Image (cartoon, rainbow, N blue to C red):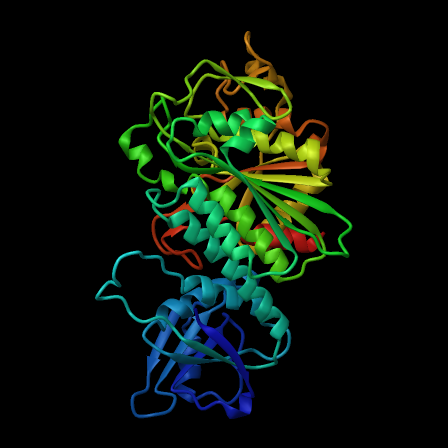
Length: 472
């Protein structure tokens, strides 16, 4: 991961010089005339890089990196563009604009996240070495860099957890990784419920979904408890470490990437660890219900009635709608035992999310206008997109069951993402008006590099959660 160091602009003596560029805005004084001339034709679009070789001069290479309109997204894209354009360069010097025209946090996040790589095998022979050091010629702002690094490290932790193949990524393995990462920070406590304790306490949804696997389920509870906290936020993340669909088995192509079906759990635990790293003054509890949804003689069946934590029952009419069953247990537990002020759950829950909103936007559900607005604003600041969807109460009747308190899927009506949210709302109970549900299956994964996103797991939600928590 690249490091950053501030230097005095008067001391710049760079071999590779980077100049952030914005259309219509003059470059800093003192740059070579050929660099200024090149900038005239630069679009300024965020992340677009123009390279000027100067082999007999110093600097020997100049990169003009577009920052868009100068907002956070443009600076973030510029940082990622820089990281990818200088991968074979050990050190670069960036001439920052004077005054308040630099979003240093966004730029540093872009550099760090754009440098991310995940590979378990030997390095590819054609893979360039990563950028090592970024010298920043401008006004020092160590706080912005520290926040950017903590945010990027947490996002990369979520990416690592999600990218890991499921032959290794069992519920037990996930819990061990979280325990190891949390051990680096004071003020974090963790407990891990294993199958026997889950059964003793009545977590029927987690046990049902995990019952088909020889690698048993877990419930991770990770808490950051600063002394000055005045609010308690519970973050719940879906943690299906692999999803075959169970008895309602998926086709092969739909199953290939199901190692990503725990992206919500990865996001909430990583955000909680980063809250401790940043010493945010809000109490945060992350709940990660973890299970493998496999096919075997002990797998739960369509039509089974499941008794969740707290006693509410649901009829499971599709074992491939398993994520809501584990989330239901965690939500009911949070309401009953943790006394939260606010609850947010993140889940790679439905394909209907992608049908409605495409590959880059998560669906947001909440009955609380102010809460929905603040969360959406945090997502925009983070460079992660959400769109508020309706919790249509008229559809609630479609979740009725002749056998149980409710059915896990709708009997009719379509609207799969909405129906899943309505199901979960039943378990938010008296805290429904202080609850947000995020269906983020589509944006949790990307097929090719794009701005600060690297091919594979995106770590979606970590950056939004951290900005939202900081706003509290």
